[in-house]
Length: 530
Image (cartoon, rainbow, N blue to C red; front, side, top):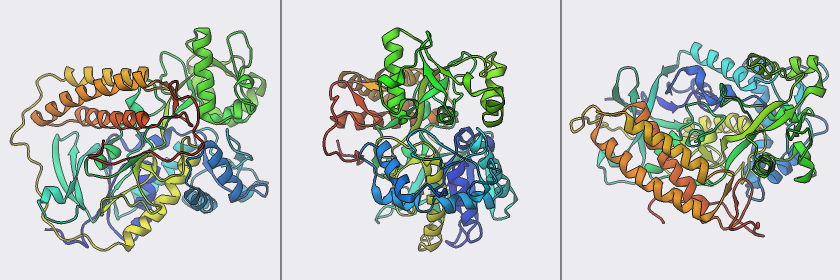
């Protein structure tokens, strides 16, 4: 039996949030990191834009806080925003020290080239050309692979948290570990842990069109909810305005930095349309740009609009946006000569598991960091490039909190029980329900919502949950079933949150409640409360 001091910290997720926690912890504690697909498939690697760093002489923490609040449409927690902004320079410096190859500028702060994105008053985005996430992820993953105190488990997926309920203890609930599926081996292991960290990302795959990788199935949010944790602001799903519209590429993001450098949104006849929607034009916050594109598409009966960067020139585009240039070229689109067809797609989950600024959830022993969480930073809409910053800053504070926490009480954890289940006879049930869920979320719970659509969505989600729960109870688990179970849980949380907000604010726009209330509050759901 493991003693409290010998139990590792189990980090679920191998993106920026998870790797930051792991690397900051490894000097003090053994760490096990679970990645449910290959280690290089985390959502972090898909991030193109960059990470905020308040570094320039023309910048300040107060300016960054103001921009965050403006984008967040009145629901940003000011203390959280200031806490994270004040540590942004330190976060970027840490990444530089870890070997991240940011784009250089000899005259820039720290020798870095800073770019500007929508909603930012000044240039404050440190980036590695247009593949910042991949550069960061590769650097940190290389460090984690080399660290003797970090064990990386590829193709392992968390099933559920092990809590006091599983031990049948009469005590306040706490987390003791996690049940985890070895996907290739097909067995479920019980992993005892001194602490469990949820770093599983968002819920983008609940929608038919998304810029997210296949890993974004809301696993951490669903597990925490089932364990009794509060969940906040799930109605605020950010749709990125510009995802490439192409039959061969349904998830390729066209970074906001391209608009930051001067690219224009246009109709098929070449008319720019953003001026009619917001005086900031293409540099308006993402929710405004996404709704503007949605409006123009519906008004003109379009499948997509155009993002025109041809006036920026071949040399500039190849230097600053080599990934986009190369990917589009493979598809027959020369972005120096042709506009890019783009469409909005589900991109970022602004809500999630309620935590404090050290990653603590409502369940002792359970922590959460990154897109899985609701900290108050993003409010009703995330400011561009704040997400990677949140991962690093709160990944550091979370690691510190775990080191300073009391040891987990010693316990013998029950093994996973498969004695009453059998192998599934028809996987088509999973694939059919998966497709139906994503389509109904896209049609009924998208960029523009109505109460009737939301009610219809909730009714069908309730039926799907019954089918999926019955399937889960009777058959051995696999990754597809677990992901579908988590997605339908998160879909319900999104719809319930949306139904409870009787206004339009930020990323939540309701035709039945088009006005923004003078005073509003976060939506916090408590399990068992309706």
